[in-house]
Image (tube, rainbow, N blue to C red; front, side, top):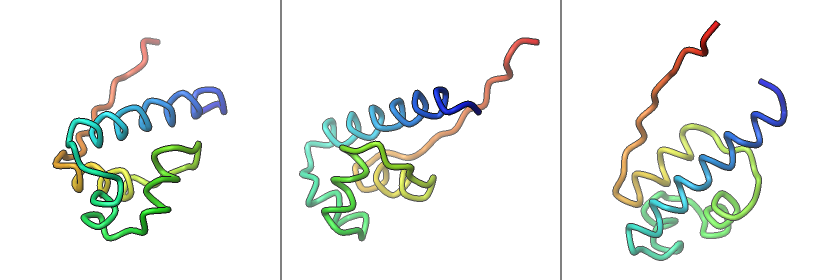
Length: 77
């Protein structure tokens, strides 16, 4: 994956996370408590271009009342 593609993927993941947190109606502090992570960590995940793990994505979504679903799509040849 090229760096440009990676940036786009990270931006899409951030949008999904921010949307889930917003829809949940929970504060970032409550998301952090439910995810068992420091509030500063959750803020960094949601508001910076850090590279997050699948486990972190799943933890934030779970804390917001969502579950992670992954779907692979084959590129046309």
